[in-house]
Every structure is written in structure tokens, then in C-alpha cells.
Length: 437
Image 1 (cartoon, rainbow, N blue to C red):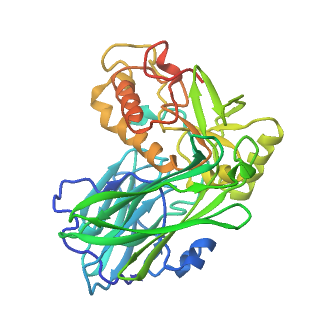
Image 2 (cartoon, rainbow, N blue to C red; image 1 turned 120 degrees about the vertical axis):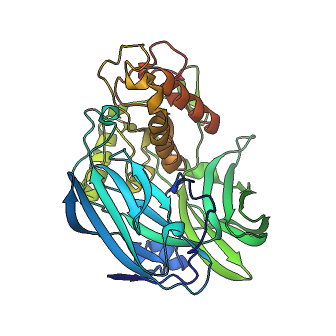
């Protein structure tokens, strides 16, 4: 049994409404205790981090069950615990201490959960019941390479006053002379009372020169979230353009302080550039960008081999990869590093009866499936939106019909994404696509 020491884990009523979903849609990130560990991705130096490496316990009604036990030593009420699930290769039902936490029908998209309210002091059990999907018609023909089961799944803790998410982009300013870093930091306060936090960042250019830094304070009401925005100008950025084969990345270190003490570090990388889509064309730095796509390009279990293939695609003249479903975070990191564009895709593929427009005749026009469509689209969008390689989003990688669910998915994406285009090739002349890829 593993021992997971969490000073001050919020064991009781992190979220008062039990019915509220534990699933969290946000950028995938880990917080580090020290700057050096953040730069080197040394997870073994994070005090409140644990790999999820469960053991097989049994098979019940065709569902393979995996369990991991860990112990919590709670002396304060100060932390949220997050559970990241990846490479599960099937639908699953998640239980913690015999409490139902979530039903996830998407077999490929990584998911995050805030699980503190299901925990107790002492020994805890996470049980994953790997089952058949209730909606297999939503991912017909989509096959993920065989990764190690639960590879890169983990648990980690954040203080109850901390960074919940962020938005970051480094793009030309209005004069087209300099760059402007647009960094929005979303702070969550899960205490019942008002709290003040200090949020800081520093940014280094691709040659390691410090370009800017700042620390600001933010007071957040209890049980709420607020956003702290930074918008500094970054000079000489046109010497380091990113994209279409160019690959220089700026290093941004995000950190928080409280009462003068550094709490957590979040390392980010961002490329300088701006992608726009208008009149059916992509523009990069106000010049037409000719897209050369490689369809159905997905990460393989071997990371080095995946990166070699990305480099080979560049040599063959491709500048844009189109995966079939959301990829592991390291895939987008590799595309950022390689200067390769990506049009990300939700795990939706339902070609059977795709020409039907009857209600329920195709999954895309079956309102009973709307929640599942929205979960898959949200999971795609929030995970990858901050990567410099992303230049657009696709609702599906195959012919998947059209109807109510695809209309709603498109409308939601357009409501949250103001810069990049949304594509759906199966719109077939209808309004729910920005253009055909």
C-alpha cells in the first residue's frame, strides 16, 4: 500500500453540492515545489505527487477492475487532490472508497478529476472498472496504439487557493513591431472566506535572456474564482518567430506566493506568432499560410519514434498534423518543439447512417447523446488550447453525420474560442463549420 502524505488535504466538503461532477476541464499541468524540479520535470521531487499504478483485482460482469490503495495523513484542511487518467483504452467507471465518482465513455481522451470530497483520513481506495462503452457508435473505427495501461496517470495536490487554469499566447502587438504576452491566470479559492494570493511569472527568450517578470496580488472571494491578467510587451521577438518549420520557444515560469512563501511553480512554453483564419485561408504574421496536412497522424507509444516521425513529416513537406482524437500532452509539446502545426480533433467518429437526417437516425442528431458529445469536445478543447502548435479544432476526423449534437458542439466551441477556426467536414453546406479543411 502506498503512503501519500498530504499536509492539509481538504477531506471534508471541498464542494458542498455532492451532485456536482468531479470531472475538471482544464489545461493539463502539474505543479512543482521547486523551480529546478519544474524546469527539469522531476516529478519524484514533488511532495504531493503519486503515479497511478494500480493492481488488477478481478473481473466482474466482463469489467476488469484495478485498484490502488494509498494513505493520507491530514493535519490541516488546505489542499485539493486531483486525479489524472490517461491510456485507459476503454470506457470506465471510477469509484473512490466505494463512492461512484464518474462514468467515462470515451476510451481515449485523458481526463482529470478533483476527488478530495471522496477521500478520508487514513487508507483510501481508487477503483477503476474498465468496461465496454455505452456509446461505441461515437468512436467507430478509431483505434489507439497499444500504450502501457494507465501510463502517465497520476495524482497530485494543490492548495485550495491556487492556479486552476490559465490562457497564454505570445503574439504581435497592434503596431506589428513587438510581441505582447497575454497571460490570464485563473485563481480558485475553495475556502469559505476571502483570501489574497500573489501571482508571478518570468519569461525568457529562446536564448535564455530574461525579458520580463512581474508579481501581482489578487484577493478572491470565498468559494469563487477570479482572473489575474498580465500583458507585457516583449521586445526583439521578431528575431524568434515560431511556426511552419520555425521552432524557437520562450520559457515562462508561472508561480504563486502567499505570505511571502513560494507555493508552486508551473512551467510553460510559448511560441511567438499569430494565426488567423479568414476567407477560407490561414494567415501567419499577416501572410497566407499554405497548409500541407498529414491526416490520421497519432502518437505512438514510443515517444522518440513519434518525434522522429514528426521530423520526417516536416522533411516530406507537411506542416500540419491532424490526429484522430485528443493526444497525450507530450505529443503537443513535441509539435511545439518541432514547429509543427496541429488541428486538434475530438474523439468522435460515427460514419454509420451518417447521411440520415431523421432524429435519432444518426448519433449526431440524437439529442439523448448531447452530453456525451459535449464532454468529448470540451475535453479536446481545454487540454490543448494553450499549445502554440494548435491552429484550429475539428469536431470529427471522419464523416460523422450532422444534426442537433454537432450544432450544439459547434456553437459551444465558437462561444469559448474567439481566435481559431472550428471545422466540421460533414457539415455538408450547413452553418456549423468555418470552412472545409
